[in-house]
Image 1 (spheres, rainbow, N blue to C red):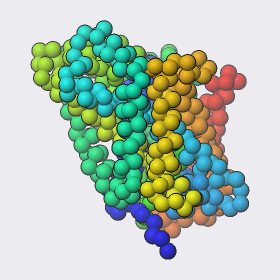
Image 2 (cartoon, helix red, strand yellow):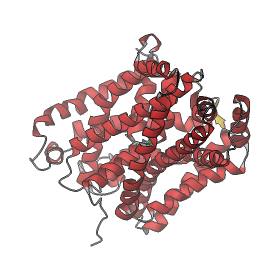
Image 3 (cartoon, rainbow, N blue to C red):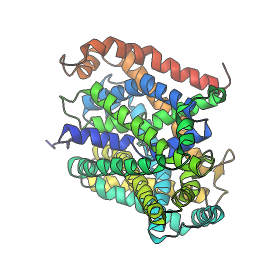
Image 4 (cartoon, helix red, strand yellow):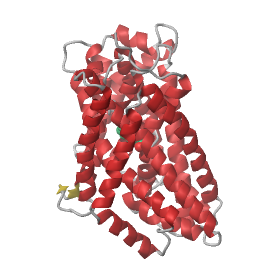
Length: 451
Ligand code: PHE
């Protein structure tokens, strides 16, 4: 029989799964969301969702994936046969491929900015940097080429397989990423006036919190943990029988949250120190930040130059560990369901994601007509996945585990055949049965104005 690939070591699986979770969601999306939604209050709500929904949700996806040891679509069939649950897996595969498409646009920008930092091209006043971004992002060929190039780079890791590709690269990239982050955080927090940025991050002002902020925090929690996309389920299918699922979920959620908060500590102190308002939205790290580095280190231009290079290298690395996981979901699916070789399956995903990447890239640049509901397609894809499909995927997974799956089999997975975490099982089931689904429904009803 064909032997399925698996992660080789505990540290390897934690770093690979944390690599999926830690990405542009932490260093690009989290800071601009926090900036737009009032700082610390948003973060508190976000952490609340990570604990209440994120950890039980992760454990649930792990259970489904490891139990089945197969791609996501088949995995959802295994714990309750014959019912249409496999479409939850399919939904996750669709979501992650859409995300791969638009995410690669931003990842491509990061690589372009890395190159521009090395060349010293993004040095100039605020107007210059803004123009630079506009000229670059509205040209046709370059952003598209960088986006597709990024998907192809991901493809090259994926075709090497789980242990030799995903695990090996994650083990190298994750520690590097952490080190880069720490260097920039220290530099940023030592700037004069940095305390205002730190206060913005840690002193909550709940007056800005409304239903919209709740949904944004919920979407961010799902997006950041890669939850509801079948990513965790697919990775868990490569876990070993003795992997402690609850510990792993808690560890990964902790690493992910820590890195998001550190990303805030990297960006806000520097932004406040030069008097730049952090609520500029998705372009925060491309328009605001280059200037921040320059102004903040005006008396030490070389430090500013190096910081800028490190920063964009960090972003590109973080993006890569995540795109690898998004790509793997579809690749595993095509490989196992269509029985096509892994190499060929990876091409299917690369091509579909590249089409989404082209549409997204053009929609925020050269072809603004590519819009829906008054939003560029790129924003539509982002909203559709983070604020609808992922919470829906997470909701259905909880319902599946809590109400339909065989309780005995779920128990055996949760406790590694009676060996660990037995005391938490009842609480876990209570959460996935009642707490998590209710919370998600409330937030949706609230958003629809029905509460
Ligand atoms: N969690 C990743 C991040 O924070 C994004 C991601 C979403 C990865 C969905 C895989 C699946 O950037």
